[in-house]
Every structure is written in structure tokens, then in C-alpha cells.
Image (tube, rainbow, N blue to C red; front, side, top):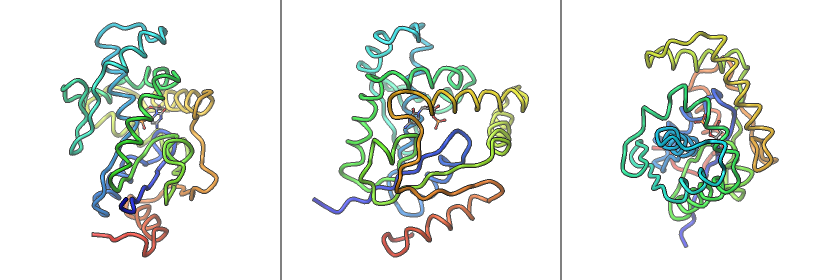
Length: 222
Ligand code: DC
């Protein structure tokens, strides 16, 4: 088997991990896998179908019968491009509940591991370094102050036309962090061997540079 390079990027909401992981994958010519988008796509489908999110069996059945595909920066569920829809406030509000269900995680993690088996990947999420790819060659854990994380999300929301205020966004992030880091199965946690990068006050390029420095000569940069 070819020597596959796996790079895990974990961190809480708004830590910058998706932006950074995506750019890193471009620079290294690797596949970018946004695992949060997978949980979001399933949540979107469940809401649209009117499935009761409190009903673990129904949600698990929906996960089992769904085709989730990440391709060329787009996210599809059962053939529908849901890239924009999965960032809605409603999906934000419910995704952590869906991602708490052990059987749902099992299905998602299976797909994620398979994608990372045959090609070089940069994968971002909450449990990549600890659970999905514990043997990843490089692991990063991104953090940022709650104020900065909330501000980033608030700006994203405003740019996409959503009418929300900063305090509401901040509360929502804190609530999601709480659920994501206290759930029983594979909570948000830094892997012991992950490098922590605090992105507060740093530009995207500064964070990328820190990561590339850590990778050293181990990978080729485009
Ligand atoms: O990264 P994000 O905000 O798009 O993730 C959405 C939610 O999905 C997050 O609140 C928790 C869940 N998630 C997870 O449980 N495990 C992952 N590997 C990625 C995301």
C-alpha cells in the first residue's frame, strides 16, 4: 500500500478549522474532508423530512438509508447539493443532537475512514485525531477565544444575509460546545499527540504558516 498521509484538524465551532483545513488541503494537493458537513447534511435531511430528532431509531434509519457525498467542495445528500442549506440556523441548532447518537457516529466514522484509506487527506472535525484517524501522521487542535469565535460566526451569518445578533450567536456556540464536548461517545477533545494552535488574533495565513512549519519536509507544498 502507498504511504498515505493523513492530517487531522480538530477544534470547537469558530476556531477556524474548516477554513484552515480547506486551504491546507489546496496547498498540499490533498483531499479535504469536512466531517461537520456530513453531520449537517444528515440533520438537514431529518428536518426537511419532519423526522423527530428525539427518536434515535428514526434518525439512525435515516442515516443508514442516506447517500452522503463530499465532492469538489460540494456536499450532497441523496444526490441533492445542500452546500448552502446545511449552514442554516435551524441546522446549527440541531446538528449536535444528531451527532450525539452513537449509531449515527458509527455510520459517519465508517465513511470517513474509508475516504481516508486510499488517498492523502486533510480531515477536520471534533474527533478526528482521537477516534476517526488516531494513527494520523499529523494532528492539530485549533482554539480561539469565545469572543473571537462568536465574532467570526456572526460575520459569516451576516455575510450570508441572516439576521442574527452577536450575543445570540455567542450563546449558540457555547451551547453547541457544551453538547459536543460532554457527549458520551467521542466528544470534542484534543488528542494527546495533537499540536495546539490558538488562532485568536491571527490571520489565516499566519495559522497556515505555523501548520506548514510543523509539517516540515514531511510533505510537499504546491
Ligand atoms: O464543524 P461544524 O460546526 O460544521 O460541525 C457541526 C456539528 O457536527 C458539531 O456541532 C458537532 C458535529 N461534529 C461531530 O460531532 N464530529 C465531527 N467529527 C464533526 C462534527
